[in-house]
Image (tube, rainbow, N blue to C red; front, side, top):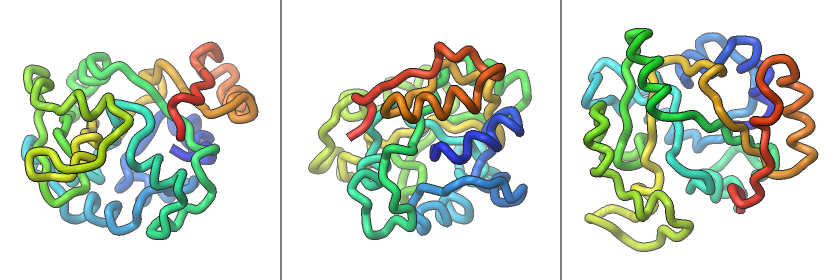
Length: 206
């Protein structure tokens, strides 16, 4: 997410999904493709929870150096956001801990085998189905070509989704691009999280 969203995350105690962020008029830069955001809010629903649009869930990738970050890095002309990758921060959580929290809260969770904003994806809420994800593609820095009839980059964008809200207390690591951004995050999070979880990971960026 963009660094300027961090203040509202601290204030709210966690991250809200896009639909709630809009409803609550929470501040911060939106960095996604507008037409994909609209699909996630109004078209794409989960097979495991048909009442939920994808935009009703807080999303996580399974990897750094995402396809979306590449578009940001290249300043793709379809993006309204034009300020590059430097202000983007990575929030990292343990999937099993997140699922445990969601189950205690009575919240839905799922993971997808592909981009959850696309016209086609499958979602699962059984950990045994993790083997259905294309882990070789997820972990690779190369995603040109086609796989199983889809653009390979779609499988790179497999997602983990939690209904409505994700608490800051579950965030175990925060990755930034350089010391300048690390210091900004430390200033915002002093007394909120252990500062040692804020890490510089230039390798998570392009």
